[in-house]
Image (cartoon, rainbow, N blue to C red; front, side, top):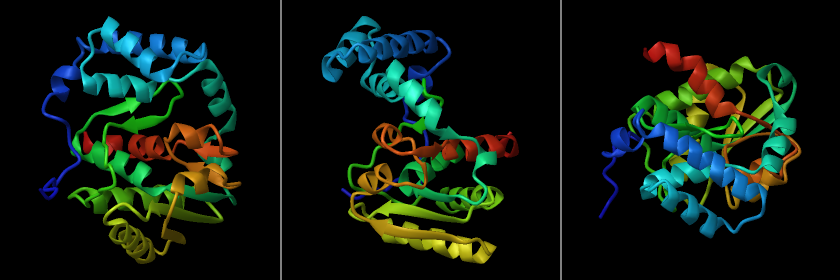
Length: 233
């Protein structure tokens, strides 16, 4: 069956799963899972232990996994994170799908997560398939506006080539950047996570494996969302 989604909005149960009543247990679950990760517990058994303890649904367990991280990871990511005023003259390499999807979710009213490392993440999953939605063009425009404000030497968004519609998204970014007169390239590439993990430029992503390997990173999705949040109120 084809993917008929037109928005990157909330799951039908999200209002219940992430309600104000559910948040205290979710926060405790993140604390507990982070504690277990800090002490080297196996991931699968740690997630099951915490999830069972707080009787979390599958989607809540996923959110807990995305928000939790070890003490060492927090320290490592904090030391390599740059603020926007440190970007002037630097090169920025962007995990395109990762960042744009989070902005799309924001525009669609979906669930956004603020991890223990301060990084903003979403609940979207693609499994090799991405579809441009109604919010895509606006998300790209918002991203380009923020990138332009950073005074960068250059910026490139890498889009995972094996993912469907990667070429369309790259072209959408290039066309929007050209229309705004912004030096912002978008390319499709294989193994984007490996490319960014080994980059010596500043990287924008919420992918934990990349954050733990790159030299420096920018919390770009959070920056875009926070700069535009007031516009949607």
